[in-house]
Length: 381
Image (tube, rainbow, N blue to C red; front, side):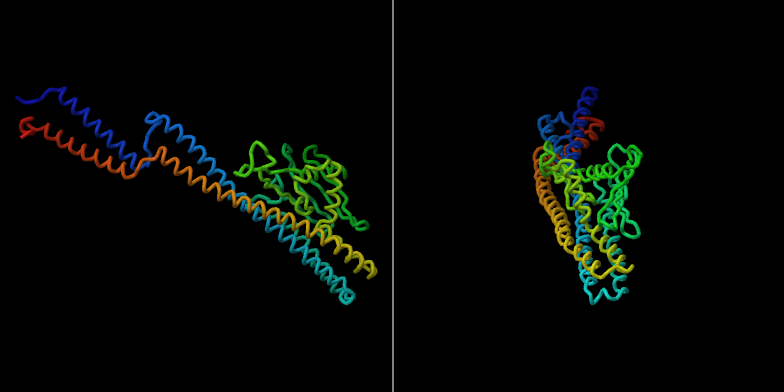
């Protein structure tokens, strides 16, 4: 009697399909490294794995952000150091030309004057430095070129787009030759109207108070003050006043401190030396020239220190980021291991399982082939 019952073949087909499904599943396990294909395979493990994955993605995001911030801070460090070095070089030039043996020759005075003006312009170029097409000393506004300097070095202009404004606000600082101090004026980018001295100072203070706290794995996100402030505006740099220090002052205190610091900033001091040189070349007395340069030199020492403090602060922030980066890298590796333990397939076990199902499937195919022969009794011989 020949075996041709349809239910017999149907049962065999179901069995071989089941083996084939298990084979495919084991092959997916080997290729993906995952123990489970879907949440229903092991809901608890999947839920715990999802939490680990969320932590892992957050860690990756912070590591990527740290790399970007580190590079920006490094460029800011270079800019601060460059300004500090130029100020030190300018001080040496002023000391040189202040000597009676050197300033008797007006050609020497003119040469030093031109060199000082060049250093002043180079400082402004440092303040306009870019990283990835963003102005690193623009504060919260990284898309607007922040500074320009007039050809004679007497007028420094700061451009800044405040949040919510459609246009940049212009803050103009003009060095008065008679007093050696800045006068302030500007144009408001929000109201599109001219500003007087007080209004301009208000905007300068506002810009210098802007912070750029970032959650990069350092500090507590629920307490912003504990996070790393990655903003360093150009005016903060040349005055040595951080956003934190500015925010700790009253408005009146902040304005008074800003006026004093801007008048003694690297750009202002070199501007005063240029003005003194112009007066001397134009017929001024040697005594007035020497006295003016002496006053500038005395102030330069303190200004060098304030710029150095900003430079050191940037270096400390960079070190903090490096330390945080190391900790996050360790966390990333730990999370990877946790994920593998929770949801990962054991490679040896997965491969062994795959070969086992492969052999079972091949055997089933041979059975199916023989079933198609003339008789079951032929098959079992």
